[in-house]
Image (cartoon, rainbow, N blue to C red; front, side, top):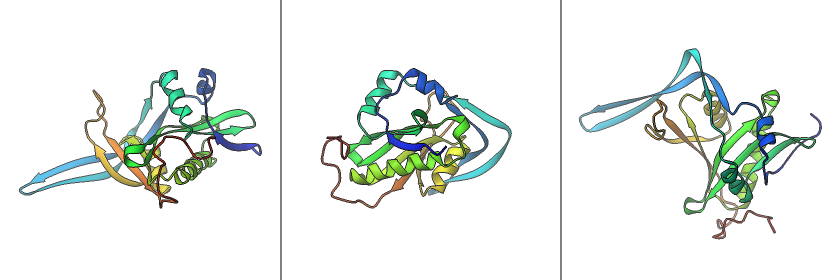
Length: 197
């Protein structure tokens, strides 16, 4: 793996997407959200629970047109072993709140547990800081223990949750933010990434 490098991901073929393997996760834990209401107070509590049976989820692939629209914005990063795509972090700028939102994050099965996810995130942080964003956002499910652990180990804070975001699913969305110290005055008012000229 000596030829591993990171670069902006500007397009993605169906073959490259398939080469990353199954788009989903297997989790041995979940974060259960409990709501307690009493006179004058509403409390939420999140508890990590070990699952007797691992939870497996497979996502549907995003439409190629929508994926390539996001990639064209210039804030997505690929991890490459020589010329082979082995991981990707797809992000979209949210100008209204100066957040770079992670929309898709995947590392090929055979390349996991090698620090590639951390490398992709470090590149996204670099782009976000250069673009003047105040935070990087990520959303995952309460059932995705590996993602929750990853984000928390990288300094993300749990900023909130949504108990009914997903239609027809018994899953809650956990909203994470990595708060950045701005390196400038903020985005220029455009969605142009730094150094895109």
